[in-house]
Image (cartoon, rainbow, N blue to C red; front, top):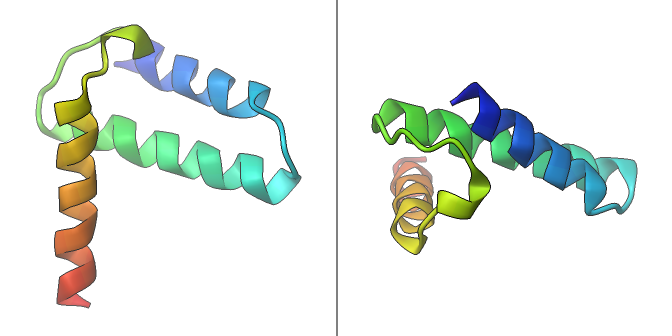
Amino acid sequence: MARLSREMQTLARQAGGSYKTVHDRLKIAERLASHLLSLNIQICSVQHLKAKHIESYIVTLLIIEDRV
C-alpha cells in the first residue's frame, strides 16, 4: 500500500498548480489511500484503481458530512 500512496503523491505533485492546490491534492490522496487500507483493498498501482473504489470513498465522505 505504501507504493500506491507514494505514486498518488507523486502524481498529485506533477499535476502542478499553486501550493495550496498541490497540498489539497496530497491530502486527498493520503485520505484515499488510508480509506483503501481500512477496507483491505490491496492494490499496488494507481492503474488498478477502479470506479467502485473511488465511489466508496466518496460515499464515506458524504456519510461523514451528514453526521456533522
